[in-house]
Image (cartoon, rainbow, N blue to C red; front, side, top):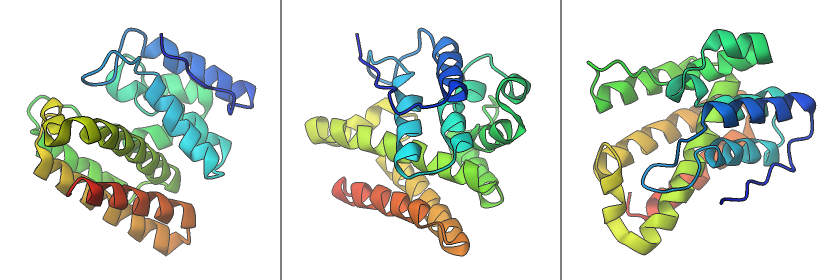
Length: 196
């Protein structure tokens, strides 16, 4: 069983968000692994905590995939954790309409972030940073075959991550958000290591 370190969660609301997300993601695992899915939102929240962002961002990070990947709704989040948290999650939840291709979903996600609240852009950047750190670990062992577990190949992943880091850098630069720019640069360095 995977040990999940939540000692950085300091408030009752953060603990409540963790319990809610853990219940929502019960039985889910990370793509291509047996690792409980809840480890991902916890790691995203930890990145946000380490960059000293506000509590609402940490809570939204814990909940960021609940609307997209579980039965939870934005209304559930609004009632349980407040309007700001629900709004942050709204802008990081992909539209999974069956008629949309992978590329169309990703283009909509990128477009949505262009005008999203700062908290959504920060949660998105931390989410993608954790994902690419995990991908790098697997790539170090498996090489480019790691990209076979995704719904797209390496080139499309490169396009998606590079497009996102442009948004993160632009938004970070325009708002003076140094932490957001640092996350973006970390993502780009990892992409370079993998030839992306």
